Length: 215
Image 1 (cartoon, rainbow, N blue to C red):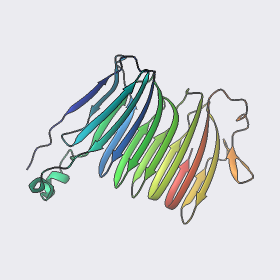
Image 2 (image 1 turned 90 degrees about the vertical axis):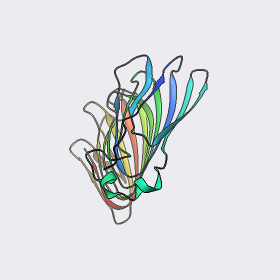
Image 3 (image 1 turned 90 degrees about the horizontal axis):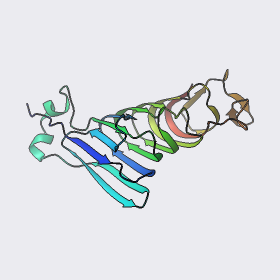
C-alpha cells in the first residue's frame, strides 16, 4: 500500500495585515480553522500533493493552495484513495488577526470550514457534489458570503450574536432557514437587529440541487 507523506506548509505573517486566499480543492477532506501561532499566516498539513503560490505587496498577501498530480501508478492503486488518510486531505490553520477574503472551490469533498474565530470579511464557496459544514465569523464586523452549489449538502452556522440577511436562489434544491432567528422579510430572511448590529452577515445562496440549511 503506498504511503501518504504528511507535509506541513507554513507561510510567515511578516508585515501582512490583509490577505486573499483561494483553496482549489478536489476530492478528499478540507478542514480550515483558526491557528494559534501569531507569527504565521498559514500552517497546513496538506500531504504530498499540494502547492502554495504566494504574492506579497506591502501589507497585502495573495495566496493560492491547489493540488498537484500524483504519479500515474499511484493514482490507479485503489488502496491509495481508501486508506486512513487520502492524498488530498488538507487541514489548514489561518491567522485570526488578519483581515481575510476567502474563496473555496471544492469538488467531491467533505468540507469543515470553521471561520468563527477568523476575521473574514468576504467568503465565497463554490462547491459541487460535496458535504460542507460552514461556520461563519463571530466577530468580524460585516461579512459578505456567497454560496454557489451543485448537488451538495451544506449546513451554514451563524454564531450567536451575529445578525444576518439571507437571500436564496434555488432550483430543485431546498433552502431551510431558522426562522426563529431570521424572520422572512419579502424574498429574504433577516435578523430583527440587522441594520444596527456590530457583527452581521449578508448571505447569498445560489443552489441547483441538494440542500442548504442555515442555523
